[in-house]
Image (tube, rainbow, N blue to C red; front, side, top):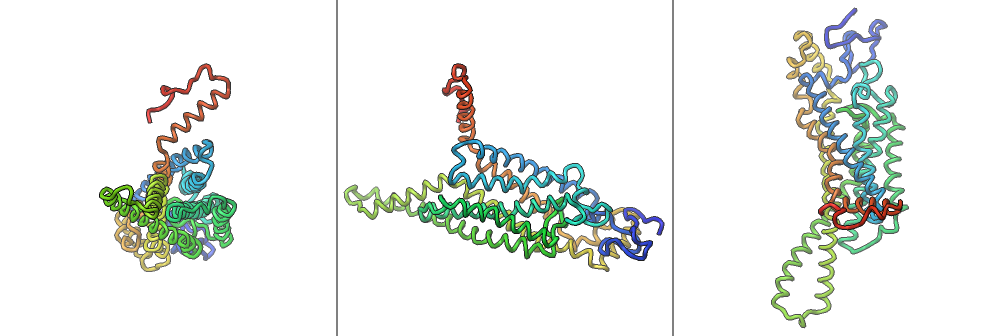
Length: 397
């Protein structure tokens, strides 16, 4: 065949009685990469995933502010706030992968022939982005789990067990992500499957990505729920005992009641101090669980579709009859594809994690600490006569 009707392109190996890709090529013609763009109304996926890339890029910029703040400000580089720093670094790496597809998404999605989907063997950009995404996904979940565990130990058990365990925590927090990234690359499993991202191929994604993630997410989520209910129980009990104490004289208070009151105060104070970590952990866990469910129920539809000979031939026949107008043939595959709104929601949810980190930890005291640091630097540079630390130098907080 000398030429193919639009939007199809010639299979470069058809003249040799072979085919470049059995999934995307039929009868000497191939569906251009990325094939997903032709199965939905024209322009939908390009515009939708461009929007989610913008959201993810904004998230990267937002969480970078938190990372720089926690790196520079001296009071942030100690337990437990340093855990937020490690989580922030992980989430920044998770969000910054959007920059790989800026300006030319096909350079990340496709092999150089413009037909085959990108993987780590035919596209080095895909390999690099996929490796970072796998590493950052595990790092974010592991450090979030450590943050949840620390909150639980401190709040429920009044324990400082993790204070001097940073060697172990760093081995786990960075070692596990590195190992899982190595496994994915070793199995040559990094591949473009969905959206504007390279991740683990659908053949391996549950065994070496989602199930290992679940090994951290599920226990952390249960611990999180236990901590939340414990705080709620203590708060209710404190309210009841406060009402009862009004009817009792001070002299009737026992040592046991005093100890219990101190315990209640510790729990409430712990919640007031760490509610931000509590909220962020919940957001991260929910996002991971939702994305896993989306992959489990929807993305495999798209991956298995290219192997369904009858449906693909029906779609090709429709495209030929419609002179390549893809909007007229969307109905042929609509029941075999993930719903477009659900795809955008799933991708948007995980793309906003960095923004959630920023909103959660960019509190007003952070501005005060930056102001104090800038003042101290200017004083150390001999500018004391020009700068005085008084109320007018600071934001109204």
